[in-house]
Image (cartoon, rainbow, N blue to C red):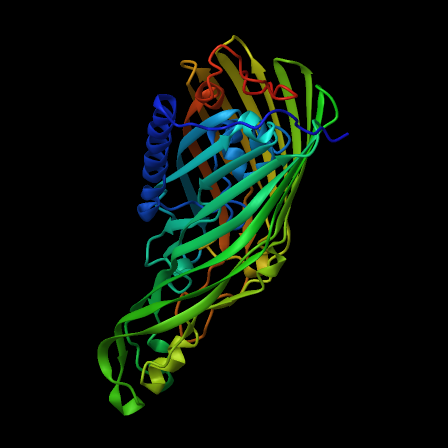
Length: 491
């Protein structure tokens, strides 16, 4: 049954209390801006294809199983329907520190590993619930995060990465304006547009002069090619939350597919094709390049069971349509020289033929004291990357993750969360023909691959639960609680 809010018309007069609200809103906007700014130098480590679902410590500490328990501002990114149950104004800032290392063993062509660079990935979220102004049924929010990413670096001399990319990067961020509405005490829906900004996608690899020179018996050292592209596109997201009763909840999250058109520059150093073959000799050049990045549609189904107000369990199932990643071609403009153009046509021209990806996430939490909540979780991802199209640039595999976390209420207005996880990737034996060419010595990527990643996340959440009742002269009146207590946060 849909409840209709009735009552007298509220006339808002901004005097001293209104001034206080404006100061707090200004402070939150400044903090949110500071949270977003680091994206200019941030990058993420790919997980489950290129996906990097690192949003908050509560989410990661719970094994990612949070879609049916969206009780924090970061719910904007995994079920925006939940923000309608967050009272007042809440701001959350999260710092994710992620590290991934990949190892390749091959008894014939040698072994290598990635550098294990530490990635700093910040996220920030702001929610506003005007309370009785909209009958406690409407809330607004905005967030920014990096749901896809890639960053790895190998020894450039190893044949497995020399022609497929010894440095690879996908750096991006999103902006997510969100609105949520509570249709009934049991059903809430939320969503909104998502602006994707990819500001650097590409990599560095060898420039194989020998594709031309070995035709006449000349062995020419390789050059180097660097690709940098950028672009942006709008998508959208939607979440629903249904509460059967105080013990049982289900959640659903949908993220739309997006195709981002990317343009940029391709820079070549030490191209060296002799003039008698139609080349320009040893020289450097630069030209334009474009490509398309298909960011997949994703859906999550979730069920949460809360046997007591202090204990919570949840299971989530994720389906991601990575099968749309059929190919990834970097198409260069003409360099002005026919021989260089022949080589450019073979740079980063790779079929992908990925499959759909699947994930199963399990999480639990228990409120130990009034201030302390403990969490633990695990998730398993089935990789979308087939062996026939595997490259070290995206060294994905089936992997199991174990996580732990905790939440501590520092004060009435401030909560901190921390989380840590280890990700164990299954070994993959690769034997495909990617990058192999008779003119390119030791160009095989074959070998045994294994990866390992870990991450630490810390979150800080500022809460002004009673800011709107206080603004309208109701200081003595307690803030109305959500219809169902979301017990995993313990507040």
